[in-house]
Each structure stands twice: as structure tokens, then as C-alpha cells.
Amino acid sequence: MKNFARYIVAIAVWGCAATVAAEIPAGYYSSLDGKAEGELKTAIFNRIHDFRTVSSYSNLPQYFRVTDVHPESNRWWDMYSDIPLYAPSFSGLNREHSFPKSWWKQNGSVDYTSAYVDLYHLYPSEAAANMAKSNYPLGEVDTSSPVQFDNGMTRVGYPVQGQGGGSTKVFEPDDEYKGDFARTYFYMATCYQNLTWAVTYMVNNNVYPTLNAWSVRLLMDWHHADPVSQKELDRNEAVYSFQGNRNPFIDYPELADYLWGDLAGQAFHPGTSPEPVGDAELTSPDNGTVLEFGQVAEGSTATARLFFRGNNVRKALSLSVYRGDKAMFSLPVTTVSAADVNSEAGKWITVTYRPTELGSHTARLLISGTGPDGNGTRGVELRGECLPVPVLSAPTALPASNVTVTSYMANWTVPDGETVDYFVVTRTRYNAGLPTVETVLAEASGELMEDFDLSDSESYTVHSVRLGVESPESNVVFVDHSGITDAAADTPLEVLTEPGLLAVRCAAPTALLRVFDVTGREVARAEGVQAGITEFYLPAGVYIVAAGSGTAPVKVTVQ
Image (cartoon, rainbow, N blue to C red; front, side):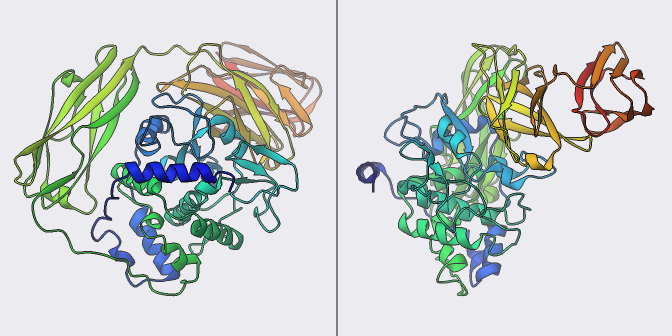
């Protein structure tokens, strides 16, 4: 293999640094016992689907610092690129949905399911590799054809025959990580088997087997060729400590064979063990754990969650905040019951950071009642930083590029020197003059918009976001199938505004003139309109004006 030398080095490093992987919690998989095929897959779904989402999308890097940093250094563990990038800076990296977020759209949006912030398929990725990977399915690239992107670890191009599921291109990871991605996709196809997939390159809308036949062959090959590594074992434990659920295909790699391989049809019997007996033991959180709240704008708050889990704890744990800036951190409770700590699910406690002044702040969370005799203590470091409320300028939306029948690239820029966490793109789609609106989150100054063939024309605007504060809205860019027009382009409509008044000048008679608000609700109309000015008296707001069925709609603000 081209990366064989690096692979051997990685094994050697892990062999020196790794500790014995934590054991699977007793009884965690007991509900799977004796089940097979579809019944087994649904039992896994019921076991792992209901978990606690870790945080907001913007706070994901603080979790990546635990789950995706090399143990021997602060280098980000990026499975998409060999470029050396180091924590805590997240510059040059994206929060990558390895299972593309556009595949599970709900109500025109991809943002509002637990999958959006599920760490089991979210990884840090170098920005250029992430952009090249786009929303393509996994697959093997046909190297006899032109390859679109190849950085030595991420390859994008046309699929070999029989792969791709209808997609024009596929994403092929490095051999070292093909098993990692296969087990990620096994997890997603099982944990979210209840979703209706909008894109079915690799999955279909059925509870079992969910994966398409071609993707089963590919993923099972990768799963067997690249077995579970220490990296995956350690990451599984870290994500479990945050979310409270596990990836069963890492704990029991043979599960994939029971669902999609040679063992399909046979009953699965996990290696369960009895509940431990003996001295009380608090297994989470560890002494010296750091709870990061990240950066917060002045006047805002942030929360972070701490996971409690133990064995044979016989009395409630007491919690208190002390030292340093203790007044800026608060707890919802002062005790955690022994029953909650000993339970299979453990107990999550939400800690709130409410800064009252600018600067970096720290405090300690004291946990009393730990240790074999129940008389010990344990400390957790609390850290947050309060920054001035950012003042953001409106991004400049640029003409779309790479416009095809089915997709286009929305583009924009921000003023030099302005720090941005992410962007919110408002995509308005027009069909027969009727607008529908959806929002898309983006990491970089560009986002691929798909399903363009389902729209007569589209427009987009952009907000930037920093510390939860949104910038003003950008200008509007229109995209149609014959090219691109922006809000200032010549159209048969001229829109004029005064306070409370929207005046529309039509260059020619039109059968119907309609005005919509940004939610797509029609708020005014005029029929049999002659050439000239038509007036609408409207409250302040943003409106979309459409005339007839062949004119690009115009977006306008009434003061």
C-alpha cells in the first residue's frame, strides 16, 4: 500500500502509548441477545438511538480535542489529509459530516435532527479535502479516468463500474481509514434507520437492510480489510462519555456479519458479564477532567455537560463549585444519587457558564463521596472565556459558480480581518413563482447546492455568525438555469420602496403580480396588472415580488 510505512509507524506509536480499552458496560447489549437480521438491527437501533446530543454545531471542536487529537502530540487526527494542523486552533479545518447531512433532509432543512451533531460520524477535516469530498458517496475511484482530487489520502473521481449508486463521483479514503468509515456508515444506517432518506446513493428507505447491495459489498470489504484500531476503541470510549451511546460495530465487529455478511440469519449472543461486585468505584469523570465552555460573547451564557458513571456507589455524590471565578459557574443540582451513578445509562449534569466580565475564567467543581470507601473527593476544572460582543459586517454574496442542471456553488466573502465561526445561507427556491425557503450551515465561503433541477430558479443570501451573533444579511444573488443574475440585474420589474409602501413598476402587462414574505406566505396580490406602477401598503419587513411565471422574483426590504 502507498501509506504502508506510515501505517506501521502509527501502529508502533499506539503500541507504546495505548492503554487497555475500557470494557463494554455490563448489560449494555443484553437486549440484542438471541436476535437475528432485521429484528437484531432494530434491537441495536433501540439501544443506541436515544442519546444526549453533545452541544451546538459551533462547539464541536471542543469535543474533537478529546476524540480526534493524536495521543502523542496536539496534532489533529485528520482522516482526510496529511497536512499537520495542531490543536487548540481549528484554523484550516472543517466540522465534517462523513455521512453527508444533505442525505437526511427534513422539511427542506438538514439541521434539525440529532444526526447533525452526532460525534460518531463527525470528524475534523482539512478544508480543501472536505470541499472536494462534497456530498459524494463512499466508493473506489476509477483511476483510468481523470481524477478530480487526490491529496494522497482523499481521492475524488468517477466510480469503478457497479459503484456509486447513481452518483457521478465518489469519495475514496486512505486504506488506513477505510474500515473506520465503513463502521461509521454501519452505525448511521442503524442508528437512523427511522429517517426518510432524501438521497439514496448508499441507503434505502427500509428498516432492514437499509444499505444498498453495492454499498454492502464495498463496506464489508473495507470492514474486513481494515480491522478495528486502537484509535477507534479510544474514540468510542470518548464519545460514549459525552453522548451515553456506543458504536456497536466497534465493540462487536462481527455484528456486521450477522446483519449483512456470512452470518446473516443466525442469532447473535453478545458476551455479557454480570454486574461487578466489590468496592465503590466512580469511573467518570476522571480526576482532573477539564470541562471547556469555549468562547462566549459578553452578556451570553454557555453550557457544558459532565457525565457521571460508576459501580457499587452506595451514597449520593455531593457537588460544589469553588475557587477562582466560582460565581460565574452554576449547577442545577448539588447531589447525584447513587442509583443514577450506578445505572447503565449513567447521569449527565449540565453546568452553566454565565460570565459577568471580560476575560478568561476558571473554577473547580468538587465531587465528594468518591473512592472505595465513599469518603474521597475528585476535582473537575471549569474553563471559559468572555469576549466583547462581535460587530459583524454583512457578507458579500458573489455570483454562483459551477452552475449545472442539478447543482451550483453559492459563493460569498467577508470583510478582511473579520473572524467568523460559520455561515447561515438562506436558500429561496421558486417553482411557478412560489418561493420556499430553507437554511443551510456552511463552514467556508462557499457551499454546494444540490437538487437545483427541482427549482425553476433560486436566490440566496448569507449571514455570518460569531459567538452566536449574526451579521446583517448579504445582498441577494439569483440563479437560473440559463445563467446567473444578481439583485441589480435588469428584469421586467422595477421595485421602489418608501416607509410602509412597496411600489412595483411592470414594463408590460402581466396577468398576476404577487408579494410573499420570507416564509413563503402570500401577503398581497394584484390580477390583470397593466404596464406601470402598482402600489402595495405593507408593514416593515423583507418581501419577495413575483410577476407572471417567467420572471425572476425580486427580493426587497420595506422600511
